[in-house]
Length: 128
Image (cartoon, rainbow, N blue to C red; front, top):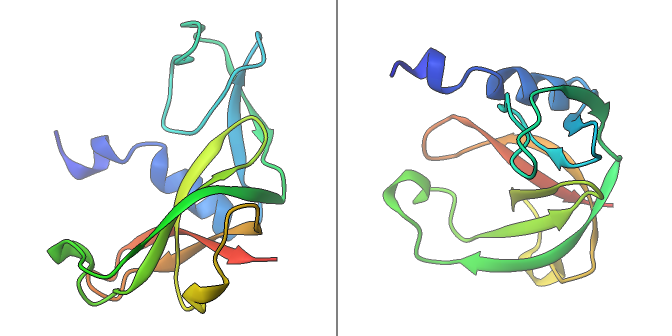
């Protein structure tokens, strides 16, 4: 599978986040998921609609990485978190943030940052 096929839908979603037009996919039964998807992971529905993502979410859990994989060695230390954005949960990194401030229950906004190691775009969180 080429990178273009593997990233189909995901790169467009990253661009939507960068343009302050973040969305999630919702089926007729109200289940939320993130692109790329063509089928609801909860019920199998193939009718998915783009719905605006809430502006903020809440950190449910996080971990601070001091010993990263080689793909993120120049980014360390950093925090990886899962934040609840209502219908969906999003995994992202805190980049350029005082890691002592990161805590469960923290309100965050979604942002797209750049990996110091690879230069690739990564999903990130910014405290609100």
